[in-house]
Length: 397
Ligand code: PMP
Image (cartoon, rainbow, N blue to C red; front, side):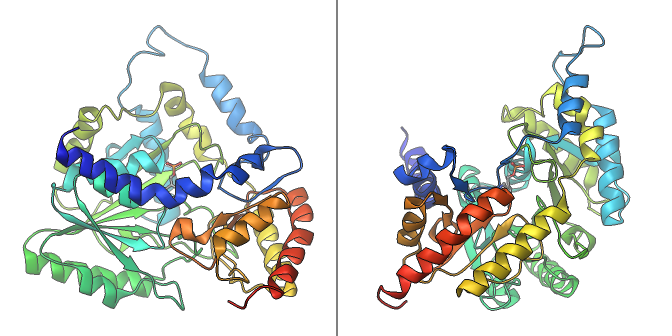
């Protein structure tokens, strides 16, 4: 391998190492066994939504000879996505500004490979989704980590201001935020927009926001979601159906350009060119045909919220420290011992599988996915009780 490629691969492997170590750990492999309580990832633990299955079945039947021909963007899918997102965000999207992609991952890769030059810096917020750093590196750019405010989990705007330089080309934001469940408030997004506008002017080139809104339909207590795109025109709004329909193996999502984005037509054309240039083709034909129906589906958010409330109350009763997430699939309790990996292994020995915080740059925590079933929660609570009792006998954190 060429030196540069080898160095990049090594950096990518280092970046995804803690996550892969957690997922591939020998004890974690037992989580698929019957009787296991699997809180490890935002995966479905029950059969898919009937409407999802019906949509795929209906649109799998060809209606003409071109049904499974090579596809660009299916206009009905773009229109349905523009309408749905527009209604949710209160912004009028042009259907042509919906660039269909393979989930949020595909949606993030597109702007990273379109507006970021090799050598540019891309800021990302820590704790991050596992693959941001790897994706920035794969685009030939330099990742720059900025921690959230440790007390509020809000963006730390001073830290962002301190990290922005003449080399900064973009910042990846994720709201609602995996793993803290924080929805960034409008005041923060407004101040961020001012900060980025000033920095863009100072360095004479725009700094883009890549707004990863994967969980923007997974919000609790009927809270409003605030898109960075309402506040800052240089924003790519990255959407996915992996969470709202909870069938992430069927890849479907898109990038939306807000109507306020400067130079929108050129950017749109560039994204399409990059999609093809990278062999990162649009979603499969059947997924595109089914999008208008999948757009109207949602998992039961009320049920997810009841699982959140039950787990938060029960874990607190047991003595765990845990905050209440505003959205996403995740709970983030502190571990009663310092070593979250050891604590994860102790739970796994009793068939409860969670992600160690170390995998998401939150040592001293574990991450639990609320996609686990009620029956899994029933089985897990006595195990959480036993684990914290055991921890009381081990050295203090
Ligand atoms: N961003 C965040 C914050 C996520 O949690 C995930 C999935 N867990 C993704 C992106 C990737 O989503 P997709 O399956 O749509 O590629």
